[in-house]
Image (cartoon, rainbow, N blue to C red):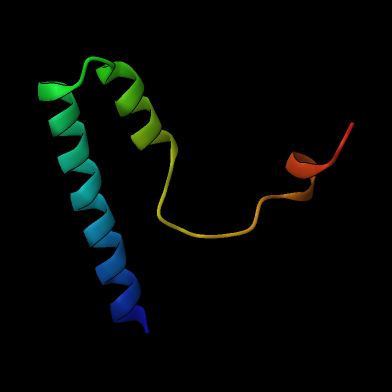
Length: 55
């Protein structure tokens, strides 16, 4: 199981670096694209209650 997690982490890092590189070359909104890639991660989990609670 640990091997699969480390593979997923390595693949995610490679994908992120590729996406950032492509955004630097081709994107009209490269700052936004890079910010989105850096602000997200590849770990799927449900949102916290405080983020989905109605006011």
